[in-house]
Image (cartoon, rainbow over all chains, first blue to last red; front, side, top):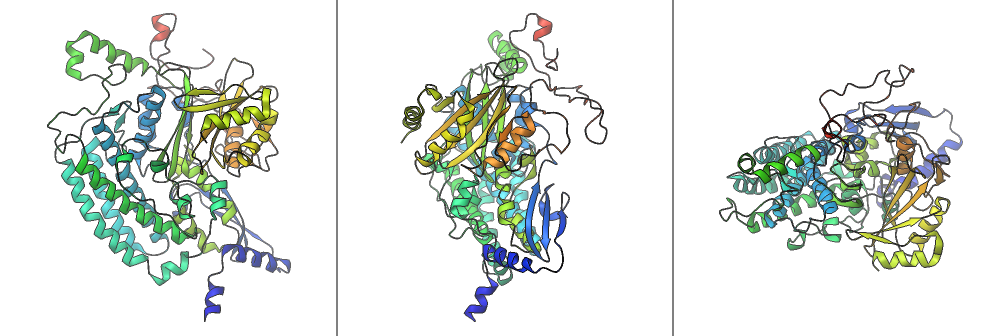
Length: 423
Length: 192
């Protein structure tokens, strides 16, 4: 029995070797199968050219770029603040986290990231963690649905709806939030938001438990994804994987711990890591990350300076009229504020010449902005290091040896989003 | 080991090839004067100094300057947490430098993207094709002399035959323009 089990659970390397052996006396020729760009399991517009020997993949060539909009080119032609809405459209499953990442990058260039008011830091952490939960809920929901477990998808989407409601009351938009500003956030938390957020935290944990009961020990689920597409720790680092995909390979690296930004130093949370690096580990890591995010949210809700309704009037923006737009009433009545408003709107925030890179732990991995400035309100060059782009590059390494039906599972477990990959 | 120590070790090993390290906002940058030896420096940084993770490779078009291109490598040592930026400048006539794919596999797609967007070639790259744009596209869109609206081509079916309409933005003010018309927000094309 044990031996039969072993054959059933062959790892992908062994399967590749076996496939190569079978090819020696192959009777037919290899078939080329085009998967995507419009395929439900490619979660967007990813195209993969598969070379098949029967059911086994012998070569995979991913083709990206179908959603390329030239965001880096656009960024060179507008002010730093004007680019914020474009960040919503990078990883469109976690717009709040992108907003936070971008604002922090520009603030690093300005050298004001340490001056951010504490209330602003807590609000931003909550935004990033809500985005993480929302993104992982979709990632796992879609992953499960692709493998036939539609119930999970319905459960997780129900919870995502609540995150959208939170984003809506925060920023006015459910999807394209554009919530952060250079040097702060668009506005303070609306009344009742913290209670709404706490209610969401209370409600999401039972749902996560339910999803775990449905999946974690489900025979079909485990058989389909366990020991599938194993990525070793060395490969994960060599291919530059980041986020849950790197951690599932057993390497503990999280930018929130490694290079703490915002107020992550004051918060307690654990970094889940995998042991094997297969699709199942990637699923488990994401599940645990959501629980840790909820843990962070609870701490933020308890510790946020000013409390729920900000009676003590804690600021949410840096106190610098040359960076943050002044209140409208002052613009209308005061000379200096009028000048600041005019300059900020027409010329943008005046950044010093220099170059910085800032990496943010986004739900999908490390979202980095490399900004090269020659002074003035627009970047000379802005490179977006998107986690999905880098994570996808490992496809041609892990696909060979897998079955055609495994592609759906592997793509689901990598959890990418093409808006960010193609930029 | 912090970034500055690593930078000094690289400087000690390669001498005149490496410029003095510069610091900005806590990040250390080293410039390599001869792009032909970039792979060698990267190999040393990985093997001897533990920079086992290549975060990003990007490129800058210094339009109107010589050498025209800058290629930027962002290195990280996952074990010691240090970060280092390596830069090297490549002339327009040459537009070629060695690939670092032998040092970090992840350079594969980054280098393809730079080739696609800027037209800089990487010698030794096994599969240097366009990645975001499509095969046969005639231009390199991230170059500064490529207008935001796109360029017309006479290859219908391969690329757009007319530039995109840009009414409504994005409008940008150029600080330090000579008169008010020059300074006011408008669409900026490199030819103007």
